[in-house]
Image (cartoon, rainbow over all chains, first blue to last red; front, side, top):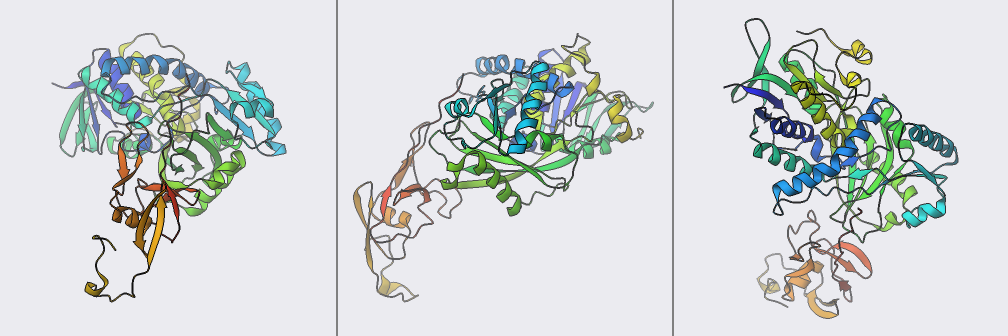
Length: 394
Length: 107
């Protein structure tokens, strides 16, 4: 019997959608060519941020998502029991700092625009900043505190969502790559063809992150998602000295830029395991996973401007990953108007961990015809900003 | 000289005569020969673990032995996070074991 929905991609977005749909009583099969959460979900920092988003639809989505995480974390803990590791949800708050005199005014006016949009964004003096983060560089020129920013361990969160989806009847098929579409005599999408056979389904939901471009091309209706590479440094475990997500004010500009050339800004936070993660970089170089020392050096140098004490700390590892980049900087969430039966939950760039639960809610509400928590028009394939980049189907 | 070392007379590489060194690990002396890593000297002294994990407190010592896993880190002469498998022991090194408690979690 065909599934109601086949989901392509077992990262956090696919896992969240599988859980939401299975909980609603739909039969769900999730297919991934690799292991669960082996792509983008395993190569970021687990950010649930409102602080890095300017007023607009993505901020609204992030604010909605941040209301879903605390409940979800509790539900998963109750459902999966103490044997399942914690998803390490922590509403630790964010601190954004300008390191240069000319950076102060743009940061403060950006925070003001966010406040008007409902974000809890508090400009604070350096004394208050040092109270929150005693090891910050006292020479910072402006600091804004965002108490709503939070963090999860993204691999555990993905596994927990998948485990919950399975408990609600979802089937997870790993090591199986989607290579094409199944179509009825009238051309309507009726499932996917994989390296291990066919999976018939009433709807095909693509949640393949940066690989969505390849998957949708194989299905015949391309979506213009591109990989945007980032690198992260990991220190050895250290005494707990960094309490918030701390990043420099350049980060917002980097997330919003369409420039393919290298951009870096410092994003520093400690993990529940005691290591410190230091990002971030953005480059469009295709799926080239090679690390570049000059990028890591630039990221590390900017991190030292925030936390001078890191000079004496040891870097244990570094890794690179790919964000799903959309040319109009908004995720695609909902049915594809060009190809009935095809759905998307992709293109979240660096915000997919945080936005996964809200994305899943929208997909489930759309599929079931239940009322949506907010207007999803900015995330549909029919939006104006996406039109120049969309090819005509097949 | 310990049982873990190949006696120089049996070593086909014909090294120079071994020079004894002594280091301290958490105040306990450990004897070795010049050229050994700190991990080598500590293992040679009969001690198999020198760190505890943050959550379960499980013992850790040499795991990969090639500088990748960072399981064997110790403080050497006041410098923390030194991989015992990568640092050559020097006579008089003061080695201290490390344990970092986990960060407290914000509400």
